[in-house]
Length: 145
Image: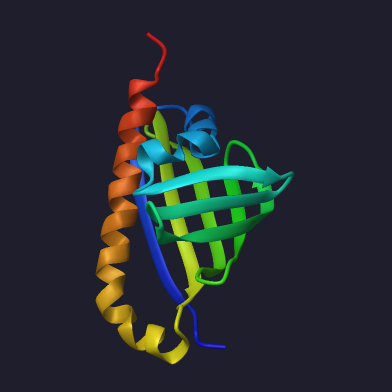
């Protein structure tokens, strides 16, 4: 097994944690905020997320290992391409919420993936941040009048 790689990002959201967590875990709505990704629940605690365009992409299968609404969801990535652990934590902060998304993953392609991580990491972080900014915008837009 290759040493895992780590990426995390956070965002402030002007919406209450309950609303933010509900949006994060509304699987069909993932395509609205998560970069090029659609998700669906396929079992009681099993998710599938497809990232890509048409046939060019990858399937990320996950098992939910911790479910503590409206604060925490932990997953284990079990797919062929994405393996490791992920977490999304939502906490009250400054009249809204703070969302932290963290991933500890085994790089794909073994040693080659580990070697390429310094180049891939800035891209992965930029996409995490972009997705979280879109989540924040969407959650704020969905606030009741």
